[in-house]
Length: 558
Image 1 (cartoon, helix red, strand yellow):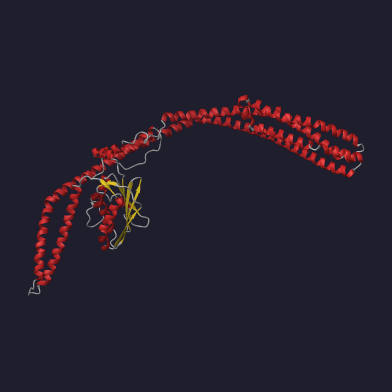
Image 2: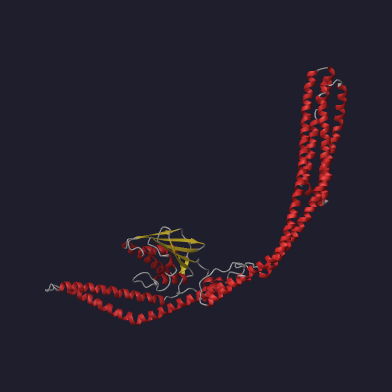
């Protein structure tokens, strides 16, 4: 009849071990204060480490410039200068006064060019070696150094120089063809061959200039990075000085903020001592103070629930006494009145049917019959009220058995459909799918659903529609009773399940209270919600069927 005691809840929830209710790791106040000082220390260490790293990076960049980039740039410049002279000599060979001397010079330059390109490639490899030396890379992580930016750049330069060497060294027979054409005086063939060779040599010079531009760009990037690191180091050192000056003020303010919630907890305790049990939001701090506030609010909520349960128990106790008194003082006299009314109805009926010569008595007899009928209706209403009080006081514990909720709902709707049709109310059932059996007391669940259906009918005196829907999830059943009436005001929804609370002129205020007690006795819940399209929805949630062992454990607790 009432909600299960806390002990039952604890017994049902006892299976949930520590793994399911793992407490969130909290931070202590002392730990937070210590962490704040550690943060400052870490900031100082970070600044010092950054400064050391900046110095090491500057030293590395200087080493790269001195031992890597500058020699490489010089070697590329030398090769490019030789290539430009070679191009000039080749371009004017057909107009030279003494082609034999030019030929001798070109042949000598062609023989020495591989050595010049080899020097450039050695300088590129020396750049990677300088990077390894500057960064202190040992043999164990040599492959990691090979994937660094400087190593990749040096490999690209060496590969590009090798490609240029192959380009300008390709087709040596073309030079022989050029010299042969000059020797026999075939000027047209000589010029065509010269143009082809010049074009290739110029392409090689352009690619050498591109390499030189890339090296210069790398050197400029290193210089810019060094200047930026220097500027950052200065800013960080300045920031550290300011941080050191402000750390004392910051720590005192932080300590004050950490301890400030204690004042709110103290004020809340004083309010509760004055009788204010209104729910409040607990302080959202993950430390001892927040834990204290949460525990305190849980205690206040427990006190509030205990008071509400006590009031409810007192009301139910009063109902029980009242029901016994009604049974003794009213029910028996009502039975006698009912029997006498039946006799009186029979007498009035016989008198009305008799051929009475006095016509003036016939209206009187008709009015008497109407009065007797009205009295009979009021006696029946009083009897129903007495039965309601008795049902609240003497409701037995549920005798649960496996039942199909969808079948039960359809049978009940079929039973109550004629009553609803007479009131102009349409009713339909929506079953999501065939669900499992639920442990319940069929008669009590029928009574709870019947109360909801009749409440819905009374909420629509001009007709409307009732929709009863059944759905299942994880073995649990949900029953929703929707109506298209005016709905329940929001300020009344929290009270409609209280005993004796009613908005009807002739209601007892026990129908929904009885319904709630039935559902809670089955371990379920009931709620009242507004519908988006208008009207009210009562939602019943019945738990999944328990195993026999669980059922015996719950019965022992109850």
